[in-house]
Amino acid sequence: MCRRWRLWSGEVPQDSFCILPTIGPEDRDLPKEVLDWARTHNPVLGIVHADPRVPGLEKIFSRIEGQTHCFLVGGMTASRGAQDQIAGEVTDGGVSGILFGGALGAVTGLTQGCSPIGPVHNVTRGRDNIVLALDGQPAFDVFKEDIGELLARDLSKINGYVHAAIPRTGSDQADYLVRNLLGIYPEKGWVSIGERVGVGDQVMFVRRDGATATADLKRMVADVKRRADGPPRAAFYFSCIARGPNLFGPGSVELKTIAKILGDDIPLIGFFANGEISNNRLYGYTGVLSLIL
Image (cartoon, rainbow, N blue to C red; front, side, top):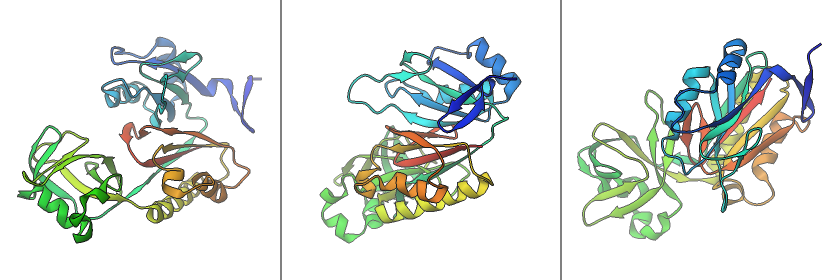
């Protein structure tokens, strides 16, 4: 009989998961014991913590995915102090976590905390993180048209409310990477965003909207529950630090909404993140839900 470890109120076989020690930018291959386990257990889901001080995190995600073939979720550490992680021991400096074998099964969903306020635009002039022109027009002129006359008259109101978004290649408006506005330059007609852009890239503008975010959260949780086709063993939820009470108000509305849809008897755990991970990519202002089946 195999040994079993308890997972909150559920149980999983001991060999159905594997601790992923810290993988840093210099680590080209995962540890041999992880690779050996992955070849035998075909992991489908990895839950990871990432150190926000480390450059090139998405390259590390791709390396882990390429060598284990699992779907990564989780988030970057959000801390005012040490950026500690726990993966069998206290660690930092890269990406660490836990991989779940294919025998368990998993479903995942992502919910956005922002909603589009205009169409997708093509970058026709861009340099580093500065958008000079969109659709052949000065980027600031396009930005003003999208946000509307009221906000355009008082640009101080856009701080923390309006953001840029990068649609994922081959996807639609529903899947995009939110990035902060770093600056606007009316006299030059430029807009600076928290992402490097170049000619041919796409950008749209979005706003943080509590009502829309709540509706999308409910949609996502209901969809994940439907795809699970039965009660899960446990649920993991990773939410941006800008969500929670900042977007939904006090009283743990976000978690209560998830628990109400999934069922109060489903163990639910997670953390607030300084950038969320889903499908091996970094997001912002999102919530990521994963169910272990």
